[in-house]
Length: 81
Image (cartoon, rainbow, N blue to C red):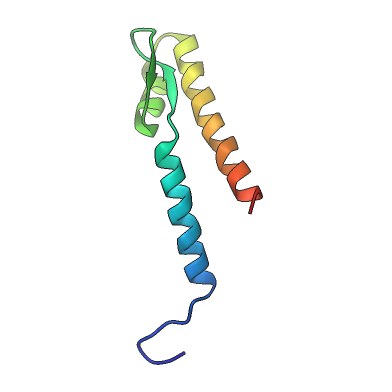
């Protein structure tokens, strides 16, 4: 390695893949049943809160389903590499 400069390598590949995954994740919309029983877009935090605090079981399950869908999507993205 030349002092002050890094050679492109595994680290650079990982950073590039993470950036690509982040960009694609930003375009992916997560949806669940909110506190009003309506289908709504949700952040990861909103899904977690809905799972923990919503008295409606169907709403809690919708948040869990959204998180599982995200997990499957990430797994699929990783295996396609």
